[in-house]
Every structure is written in structure tokens, then in C-alpha cells.
Image 1 (tube, one colour):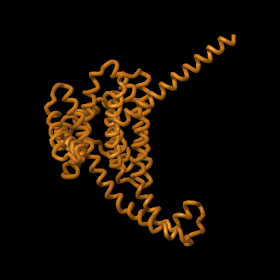
Image 2 (cartoon, one colour):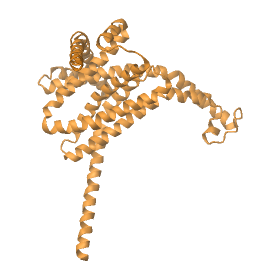
Image 3 (cartoon, helix red, strand yellow):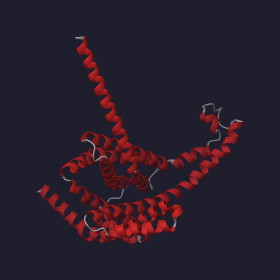
Image 4 (cartoon, one colour):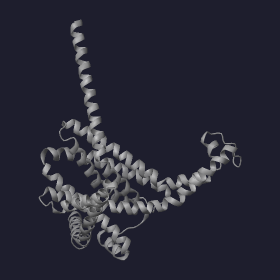
Length: 350
């Protein structure tokens, strides 16, 4: 009996070691896959704040929370099982689906460029393709819905990159790594977005705090009675707070431009890579050759220069794709969708 018990304990210890090793391996693979997906994560963080700009301060965090919840749903409920099923049953479908998503990003980014340079045309296009109703609640829901759709495409690329990094692992390890990377990247992206959109409020609090040190340690002696240390420290805190208040609007405008650019360069890059896989590598080779030539011309910053040229070329191509999709959406896809909805509504009422 004692020998049997010892053997059982030995088996339990062995299984525990195997499980621990599997978890450690999954954690390591998740870290490596997350690092490969970091570029798309940065693009995601640049794109999202533009959906929050223009709303009242008290609605900013709730909107970010809604988008983050939608992002988690995208990754864990839709993309994770879809990625596993497609990789097993229909791996050929992954590339065309990503290319469709890339085209959507190009369209969204090109719409923002149209709005920036030709606002009247942009408003006419928006009225043609979107339903009426611009009260604050419907506007917020529209913004949140647009952000979640854009996040879906970026999340799909993140999950595809992650799955490619662990393609040789077991099914359960792939699922665990996809879940860990999805949750981790969502937390980092939307945590960062929340900090960005509330930075101006933090600046106001710092600029108006006359007793930063006493307030920090809970030793305030009432309004108008800062300590000597408070008077010294508030020179820095109030200056930093004023800098945040003045600088954040500019930063958000710059980030909005970067976010729009990220949409077209990510979308264009997805389509270019997809074309390469379908036997049309000429455009991809041209972009790679231009990036290599620029890197050789500036060897001191070769990596940054190669990335900038690749992003610029992908963005230019993405902008062309999006520009072609704008009239296609306005005059073909949107009317067809409206007719389909009208037919469905008539059938339902009948």
C-alpha cells in the first residue's frame, strides 16, 4: 500500500512538473508572439484616441471602456476560435479575410483624409452611406461601433501574427497563447488610451494643487496653508500641469493624424502582403527595394529609415485603395445594402 501511494505521489509530482513546464512554455511563447505583434499594438493605440475626441470629459472613460470590452469580445469570442478553426480547416481563407479587413482600414483612413481636405464632399458621402440621427447618444454609439470595427481588423492581424508564431504548438497551447496575448495587448492598448485621454484632467489637477506634497501624504492643513516643501514642489507640479493642459490638445491632434496614417499604412501593408502570397509580388518587391535603398543611403539610421519608407509606400497604396472604395461604397454598396434592408423590413412587416 505504501509503495502504491509513493508511486501515485511520484506520478502526481511528474504531472505537476509537466503542467508547469507547459505553462512556462506557453508563457514564453506568448511573450515572443506578443513582441512580434507589438507593431500592430502601437498602431491600435494610435488609432483609438481619435474616436474619443470631441466628447464631454465625463464620457471619455466610459467610451474607452466600451471599446475595450468590444475589443476583448472581438479577440476572445470571435477571432480566437475563428483563428483556430481556420488554421485547421481552411488556412487558405485567412489571407483573403485579412485583405478584406485591410481594405476596410484603407476606406476608413481615406474617409478621414477626405474629411480633412474636402469636408463638404465628406459630409455628403457620410449622409449617403450612413443612417440619419446625430443626437449625442447615437453619435457616441456610432463612434464606439466604428472603433470596435476598426479594432476587429487590427485584432485579427494581431491574432494572425500570434498564431503564425506558435503554429507548431499544440491546439491547447495555441489557444492559451492567443488568449494571453489578446488580453495582455488589450489591457496595454486601452490602458494607455485611457491615460492619454485623461492626461489633460490630470494636468488641471496638478496646476490647481497648491499643496502637492501634503496632499500626496494626506497631511494637508486646510486650504491656503501649504508647507514650505509644497511651495517648492508646486513650481514643478504646476508647471508640468499647465504643460499637459496646453500640450494635450496638440498631442491629440497629432495622434489623430498618426492614427489615420496608421489605418492606411496597415491596411495597405496587409493587401500588399496578400498580393505577394497570391503570386503578385511586384509591388511588395518594389517597396522592399525602395526601403533597402533608403537604408543604404542613411546607414546610421537604417532600421528607422527602412521602416519609414515601407510605411509611407504602404500608406500611399492604401490611400489609393481607399480612394477607389469611397465612390464604390457610396454609389454601389450603400444603395444595395439599403435596398436589402428595405426588402427585409417589408418582408418582416408583411
